[in-house]
Image 1 (cartoon, rainbow, N blue to C red):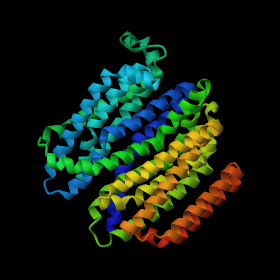
Image 2 (spheres, rainbow, N blue to C red):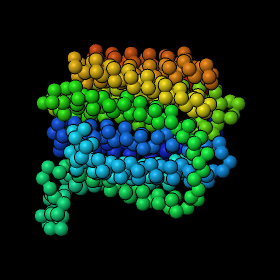
Image 3 (cartoon, rainbow, N blue to C red):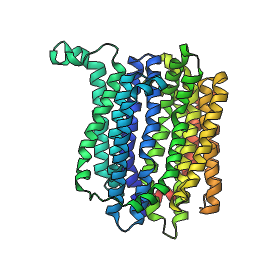
Image 4 (cartoon, rainbow, N blue to C red):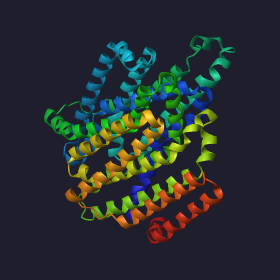
Length: 483
């Protein structure tokens, strides 16, 4: 059980460090929905959708390649320096080109050129910390990793609150602040906060760049790029699955309502973030473990148990959020004008659970160096996402986007399981996994869509599911907790 002990410990620390930055967008929802009209929040959401896409492009799979070759190659210094140089050169190249053509980018995307400039700077700073953070994870230094990530959240959150709430009032007492007070500058303040937080993070990781040996191994880089390219394709496809629905909504819906509908959809989408946070924390803690443990003879059985527990905990999160969704919406989304899209929440929760299961199942192609399968599966998911969005949005608006997301992630999950059993058989307990999913989905449908999350019905359903889960897993749970 020591393996699980270490896994859960690292998952908790890495999870905390990753959950908090993602929680930032969640924590800021009450602030943004209170201060910004739905139309402006829609614009912010669209910009962040582009953020996700370009973060993936600028990373181009090098982070995962770093982990693979750091554990595989004897010359670890060469892996560190080659990957760091590669990302630094490509990031600065992007930065220069993007600034040169920012006017054309603004015209193409319909985003204000001032926002584009801030976004370009943020993307550069974020790209330069990818390898330093990966190095901390590979060297198993979770506390330092966590502290820097948490500081980024504190700075970003603090600046958002200061600039959006207190700046104008304080400027009357401190005239020096008047220079940065502008009307209709709220969206700018959001991205300025992000920019400063990213700059602070890079400054804290500068020692990484002063300590590494600057040697670029061309042959190693070629092998890393061959490994990373399918991951880049997967990442681009993932970003399409994750955020492109906002962009398509903005494109397909009538101009007079597009920003409003994107705004309400994005705000209610945040209520499903509990599942995303859990899945992300789990993945970050488990990915280095998967690579390190891959040569162990009991690896397939261990992977199967991990996936079973992931599904069990994910099913609990699904049901808990569905049961208390109306309470959560009042706490998190302060303006009632956003609540019209709350009907998408169970669909998005289930979609993100399927995505989390997919990431657990994807271990087979990462440890067997068959990353091209990840690209194939993700591209299929992206095609489904794009196709269903274009088909469903004209008639069903954002509900069509939610359905498209669920279908895409479900298909990706099934495809990964299907190909995985051929190339790297893992003895998943499909019976238990199927029961947990069936019960949580059925109870969620009954609770939300039939009884509108009425506590008299929904809480007993939740408690019943927890009792069933505990009765089924109590032996292993007791062992883990005892350890």
